[in-house]
Length: 475
Ligand SMILES: [Zn+2]
Image (cartoon, rainbow, N blue to C red; front, side):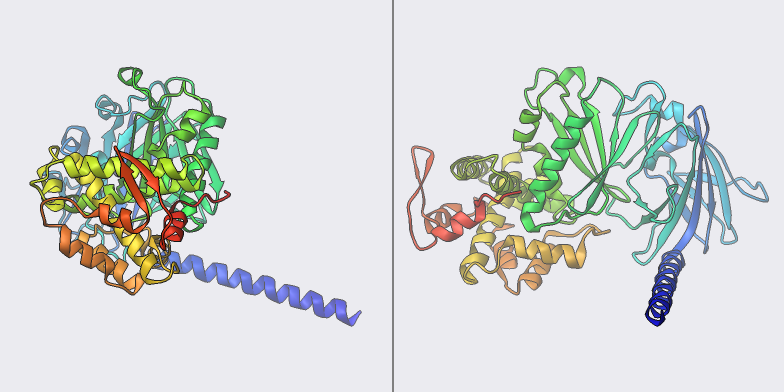
């Protein structure tokens, strides 16, 4: 009798405390927000009406895509209807402006779509029609979306846990153009290994969604072979059935890219006719998702981000058992040789700045840097430290990151997290030097020999390191 009452009171107390914590957390979330945006999409999807309530004065709001001028209907202050000047991609505000409203005509914008969505779906770039202030790193903008219940919505922005139609916009490295998809397209949330992939299937050729789901889950599995988790809790994923012009390419994923524009997104153009096995053997998705293991690195140092993804796609595909250990090392060797032959007169930083010429140099110099760093970490720590352990620490401190990092900033952070100087030392020695990083010496250290372009293994004291890097792990 007594016991039952005590249990009841304890349960009641726990429930109340949990409720109080939830309330505190939600007010915490809201107290960090500043401006409030309301988007109202018309049922016909021909226009979006934007109303902005400012929490503090802003000098201007910007939609950085130059097309914004063609699609904006008069922007005015909400109450006074005073017209707001549009100049050079900006709405120029006066210090007393508290509320702004404008309408953008979406159908006209849709003519210039990269993704040519058909029928009742509009795919637009937010940077053409969403005028935003420059956002401080401590600031969050609350954005609520009103649309017809017959329409789905896909955005890169962080979802509000407490409301399906609300999102947060935080500072962003703004690499690429984030996409807003609205309409009758199919969308789903794939929960796997602690992440929620927010997937949008663009209309077009019919797609086997069960197969795509299985492929995306396998790719999340591959990424989790780095340190057991996926680096982003809820990325936006866009699946576009491939265009006709690509139909002669054999890859099931002719093109993929990562966009970090107020949220992290991965866009895949797929050849929907290929089998699940072909999708799972293709490296593109593992490469693109690997990018999310690092923050955005500025364009002029992109050899580090491309190189990292090129090294890790091979490591992770081997750990997943898609590549044999032999094949993974062969692919790394072939890649390093392509990098070595590419623009030998340029340093990695200058190749990144030059643009197209030294593409292989850009991709494989960074791969060599991360490969050599991985081996040095393992050698110096009796295999207790590695690139995996450093990346895990990076996720815990810094991901997803809302800023663009320079190469040397990232190297310093990785040094701090691994308690070494391995990364900065390599960067100092090779980032601005012509030629290629000395991968052959590290191959030799690991007992990897090359005869007539084919890799072969011999046992030496570092055999364990070689095996640990590529070791097949049960998913
Ligand atoms: Zn890449």
